[in-house]
Length: 323
Image (tube, rainbow, N blue to C red; front, side):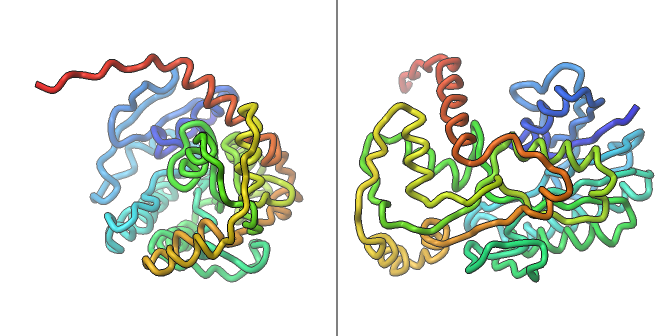
């Protein structure tokens, strides 16, 4: 029987991947740094490893494993992470891990990279795999370097470069968008015409299952995003609010009222993420046979419903008095 090892199994992506693989009947081994809380589904073998910044012998974790999905790494943490830390965790740890996978005879190594390995926060055209990679930050550069390590290791591989992911309990940039959409206030983004590709978590897990089951994906690199024309920023926020049964309350305001203050504060990076285009064209992946579960509009609507159910199942906490 095929045994699949998933690294980063306790994170946002890892938990979604584990749940999907359990439904598909995989024999699973989940690699984590600390005991997951809440626990992973029953039947999943949980193994712990040291911090990725430390020197680790990966071979015991890979014993008896046929396939690997490597999700573990360090993402955007602002100024808290140094270039050296990004390199140790994203590039060097992956290099050692994939070398051990080749040594132990892993038959398929799926490396989840990022669209930021290919581009900065904006691009003037829809990105495809044919574009020469041009990352602009430590995160993207070390992800690209990790891709090179995977290709050089001599193990059958597939590399995925996902767009910004969304789903229940998502963090980072999308969490900010969702928080804005859940607020009661009018949102002055009507004149924002930029389009940004997104990737729903269900589409992401279907992409993983697809490449693991299709031998023709071995040796390939794919950019991955929801199908169809990417939404504009006001469309994303309006879709999230309409799924709550609310009026969108998207109001006009010149975009310069947002751009100029951010640039004056030295936050060009934040403006690029808010006001810039980043479109991803997954045509190559679709042509290979990937069948995504939904487009972005229906995925965002389903997310709002899932978040609502999640909030209803979490009991309110009672404040603890100061002592």
